[in-house]
Length: 245
Image 1: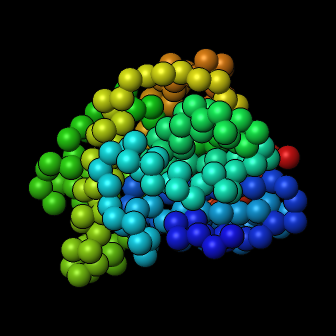
Image 2 (image 1 turned 90 degrees about the vertical axis):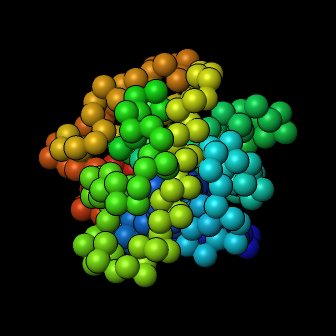
C-alpha cells in the first residue's frame, strides 16, 4: 500500500495495526525510535502531516482540513484491529479523526478498536490561544517549553526559517480545535501523561471526560516529562504493548 502521507515503519506479523500521529511540528520520524522497540508482530504506520516531512500536501490551518486530508488515504489502512495513537497535538487530531470515521456508514466495519493519546489536554483547556498570531520568538519560546526543540535546531537559522511556517500552521490547527463544538462519542480510549510534564497537567487530561460518552482511562508515568517518547522509548513501547495485547 504505497501512501504519500502514511509511512510503513514496521511491517507486522499480526492483524494488530498501530497508526501514529505526531506532536506539533513533528512528522513520521518522531516514531522511528519506537519502531525499533515495539513487538515485531505490530504493524506500525506513522503519518507525515500536510506540509511536514516531505508530505506533498500543503500546510493546513484548521483541524477539519487536517482530517479531510488524512481521510484521502486513511480508510484504506483501517481495520477493526487498528489502534490510533496521537502524541500531544496528534491526540487532538486522532479525536477528530475518530469522530469523522464514526460518522461514515461505509466505514462501520473498519472502526478502530482503541485510541491511545499521550501528553495531550482537551481543547477546552488550552490557555495559549492565538499562538499563531504572536511574534516568531514567542512561538519558539512556547514550543520550546514542551522540550520539543533540540538546542542545535534552535541555533540553526536556516532550519528555523523552514520550520516556522509549519509551527504557525500547527498552532492555527490547535486554535481551530479550541473553537469546535463538543460532540461526545463512544470509544475505548487511554490517556497517558508524565507527572513532570510542565505544560499538560492532570486536570487538562481528565477534562477529556466531556468529549466521550463512556469513561476514559488515565495513566500517569511518574517522573516523566512531556517528550517521554524520546526520553524512554523502551518504556513507551511497553506501555503501548500493554494497551494492544
